[in-house]
Length: 369
Image (cartoon, rainbow, N blue to C red):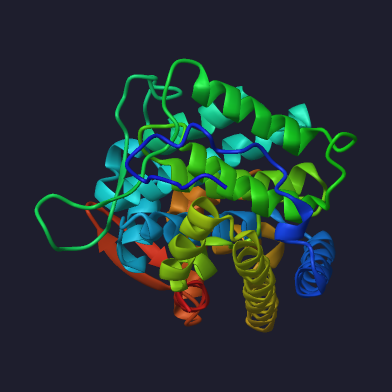
């Protein structure tokens, strides 16, 4: 293997897959089996839920927050949910706005992957454009993009990686990556292993000026949906990466510098296993809270049939107009029902600007854990 110079564009980035001996052994296969089994459990659990959309919404929001935090875009849970209760982009500022863009990109990607059945360059670019709210596409071949060392120190930060650069090079490498992902006849490799390998490759290609990390993590979830390992984007993968961020970047660099594929693959398979467990716990706790909410309503003669209970769990802050439906036709009726739930101790009310909104404290507790 040629020596790798981190100050020179990595135009010799080899296409996938790596040589079998670099990753395929008993330890990898054992961890792959565990991760695959847990993914199947999550998919099965989600299929039994009466209304999957609320879990997609809440889990997607947690994924968006964690993925943005990996990129050092921080907000408190309260700030995030308070801002997102407005739902209109014009009302959002700073980190909350970035997080909403991530969630929007995740949904856009989900719609495209379910319609087209495979990842395409157009889908990748569309996701990036929503994440960054830009009209840019693949970075210009002359753009001198480099990855600098994070943290404080010298005023001139140390270069840790220089991604491929040159006319047509990025496009060629992205197309090779898409062929690897979409062609199972030519590349008959387990889909979960493909996702792990492809995530490294995408980050190494670094096709955009910025936002590659968030775009790449969305692509991981979409590929699992493409290969029917999940039906919906409910895998909260960024939670593990955020908690083990140093390892994440260390093992990425290990593949680049010395072809250490096995540690990277083991890391990502463990990320899948642990975040599946985490996501299952979230889903079960939210489902139990919904069931308990309905029981309290029934015990207190609340008109349950007129309330779309899942709407109380789409996010912690609830505006009266969020409840408008065929069952609740006016804001005043929605306010009446929310006030009744408040009197039962199930919601808290506070004034934000000129209006009152209601806060589902128990849901907030589950999402914040």
